[in-house]
Image (cartoon, rainbow, N blue to C red; front, side, top):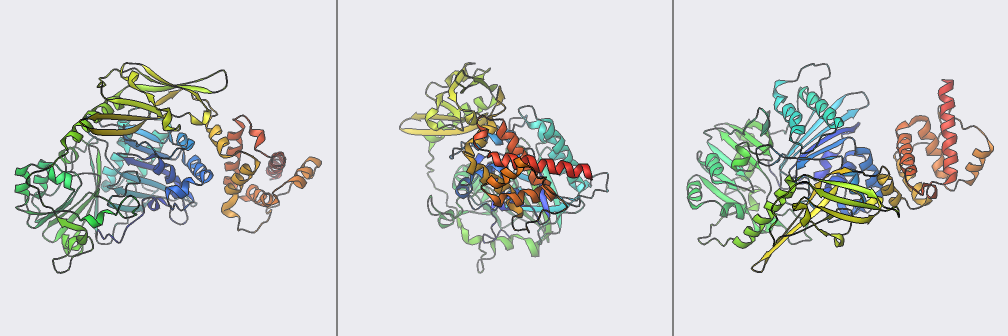
Length: 612
């Protein structure tokens, strides 16, 4: 248990089981990396993701995966915690409808880290996969933990099972935390998922455990997270700590174990730390376990949250989003955890750390924490960060939106407008830009603090986005602090053809168009090339000419096969054609021969339907 060698790749957990396809995906995260979200649909649909660099080198594949997932994926994240992406691509605009920014009403953090995936079988059976993590939706390389559960829906049952109610209630509550209006499709999808997960009779759980409980906090009806009152032994792993919560978790029991970070342990008061050491052995990750520089592929740093409690011969393991802090356990934050129950001889603390004579692989990652008598805290840096965080909070709470107008030369102008006023310290530099443009176009965002606006002129349609990146910086006493974040703002006047313009940038000519269509047909290219089912193309001079001039005859048979028995692929191509026709210059990329063949296929399909 917690074996470092049994590691899972984040995106691989999103792949559908054999025989199923993704129908809906719901994710919750505190912080969000747009590149990670951009690649998630690849794993959900039809591609192995070998790394962000390799994936982004195939923009057509990424674009198609994201286009297919646009109406199926919903991601709730804490407002103001979207990271500024390091990679520039116009594909980010496809993610705008997926991202729903959230804030709890009591000033805490929207902090759950969950994927809930609905997979559909051709038989009509729905299967749900719940992935409860300690990790945000980022490419962070910290040590994290997750638990993955799967179960099929009992479609014949009308009411949900009582054990699933906390999960159903958590899912159903999510739109209530949104800071902007939630689209109707999101409401409908969430209602469906909340209803169906309640009707999963049995979840497949890890083999060392025999019981399961869902634990929500900070949502209506669920005020706080509860732990057993008088455990015999406790294991706590959390990167953030507060005195009160650590005392509550570790004050009872014997030979307890606490694993945390240097910063968190140094931040405990002397009194709290002294009391802690009377019952608990305290550890941090060893230096060698935290990677070897920027190019290391090893895990680096601790971000895992896990709580294992022994009560005599029984154990409870809680895994999920909650840190060992008062805001997490006291209900100020929105959190979600999975509690697994079992027997100590199979899943106790000894299974995690072993013994002095026989330590586990996990124990080998640890080193005893040595508290310094004179803590050398970087007080000036923390002071600057606190100032910048206050400005981030003010911007995230502001009433801002984006407006777009078309200029006489066909280019667009975009304004970020603010109806709010807030204090922006004079020594804080505040800039912003659309995430789709180069950082050299950063503009002074100071007017936004005074109900003003910031304008970006001469933008092409593919660069228009509601994702606005902000950069805050402050320098004092030769100490520099900088933070960046993205807000997904409501938009007015976005042209209908901007996504077509993105596609147009990816498909520059006829060869690019043919490559895209081949990709859409490629799933079944190894199948026998037959027309099948009596499907025939009517003869005619125009059609015959198109066939004879068709430069890439390898496309013809897959097209005919798709028209006869793979309607989903035809829908994908039809949507591609519709999108390209929304943009200027589509005639430059769609070969005339393809247009003629496509018309002939549609006519043949129509004739077949008439005969049947």
